[in-house]
Image 1 (cartoon, one colour):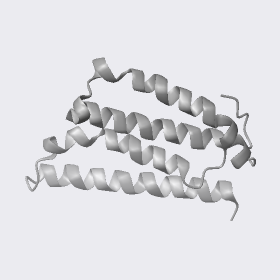
Image 2 (cartoon, rainbow, N blue to C red):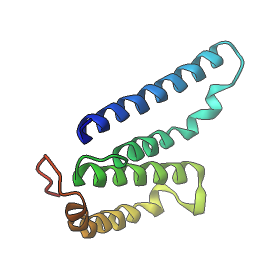
Image 3 (cartoon, helix red, strand yellow):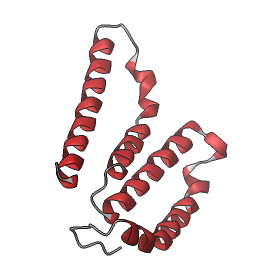
Image 4 (tube, rainbow, N blue to C red):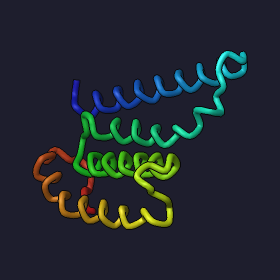
Length: 123
């Protein structure tokens, strides 16, 4: 099985499992077995799952870089919503500049590490 087909299959499986879990949570909420409203503050972790899904078995440097960006965004949103480390939207936006800089510095490393890119991999 080619790397790209394997990557696509894995992505579909992960998203299928995510939909199953979300469906079960909504079903249990409707049956008054659990209280789903208390779980909404965890939604940024879906971005983390999406980012991890992009970085594992990545077909290109761009997919890997975008996966890291998605993981960062999910973790940042979760930290802000939970008030972790005293982060708020107002005081933590410079983290995006920092992450952007880190990814710009690492992009050439990603391109060398993942040369099989089939797409135009310009930042």
